[in-house]
Length: 126
Image (cartoon, rainbow, N blue to C red; front, side, top):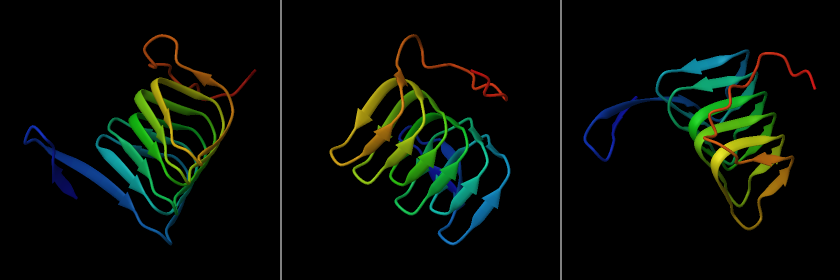
């Protein structure tokens, strides 16, 4: 699906609908809208929106990330992370800007030092 951005450019958006379950790594050069379930990592060059019915069990890596559903894993938003009121995040966060709406649940550590351009490694050794 292509949508127009504010500056008139078109943007590719991958939509994973409610009722869809993906097991494994998901990669995209565009943006992702998730209303289903992903059991695996998300690696996205664009923005990621996880709707209220969306669930991720793995690492999430994108430009700006909005979470309205459930995430269990490390989140790396290079620009901004928004936790909406019904968000449930269990994991550490790396970002430049962190917005937490009233009602959101966050169990983890936040790291806002530097550019938020931390690369999430393949292994999760302490």
